[in-house]
Image (cartoon, rainbow, N blue to C red; front, side):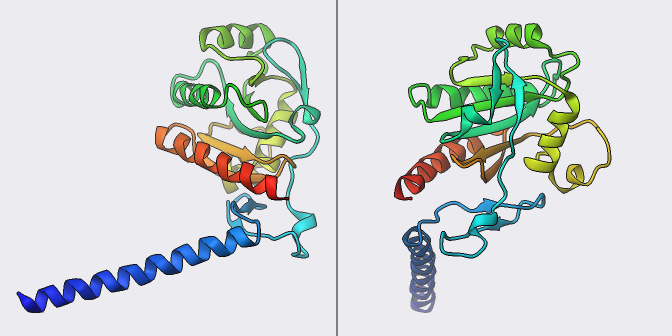
Length: 226
């Protein structure tokens, strides 16, 4: 019994050392003012890049865009500049993953309903049927706050190009597709106030929504330090 007790104490010491090493690493990231990684490739490899790093000026950023929301209002990059936002891709007729994503986007809406620095963008991947009128009804049915959450429609080629090539929404497979192969993804994508990708999450899982909320708090702290 004494033998096993000694072994147990040894394990606790090892675990404590590992925890200290992990915490030290976290502090080091905070000290360099990089709490969340950047994502520059469709394989979602995280990269921690500090302001003094030569690669900092070349971090991937979402380019200019222009779509219509559920109220027929133009939504472009000017709306999101200086704000943190979560983007996803859906369609109103979807009965598979989209209802879960919509419910979880609503959780984010309610979590940040009084925070004007946070926005939500949901892009329709069937804009030929999801016109402004259809999106408006969907918004009413799902209690979408138009000041916080924009359901977007527009040119299909523009939406798909932005989704696959810029947001990496279809992961590596979607990135290298040659045409308008249908996009059906559960990814929620966290974008910072400079339109740089800072996180990707499974938008169908409530636990991932909690992680987004936590990461937004980290990101807000990070950008305050800049």
